[in-house]
Image 1: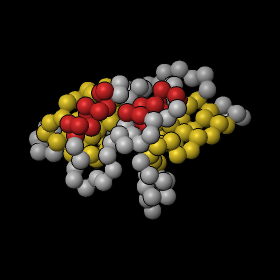
Image 2: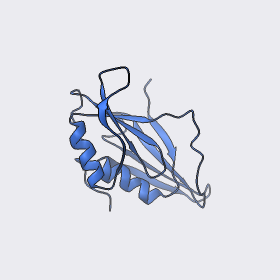
Image 3: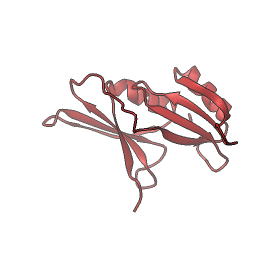
Length: 140
């Protein structure tokens, strides 16, 4: 078994795709409209779905804001240069809500971004990641 994807409901699919693809450097892997169900799914990630977990952006046609709730925490992404990743994300319109620094009660260096729907994205400084945060082509 393995984790396939995490689904996030978004209120503006184009804005969400721009954030995940342009600011975070993911690729739009696939997108499909479901007219009978009145929703669209867009899958984004750093590699093919068969290779690792991706994010499913779900847009329910005509639906406004969502209540995020307090059970969901965040999505974590490993980066090799957290300062550069935050600077690049901010330069592309990303909202850095916690600057890079050691986590509370630990030494791991982390930072947080917020996507257009208010979901938190944690960046974790790690040498194990081989793909840069913003190396992908932007979504048109």
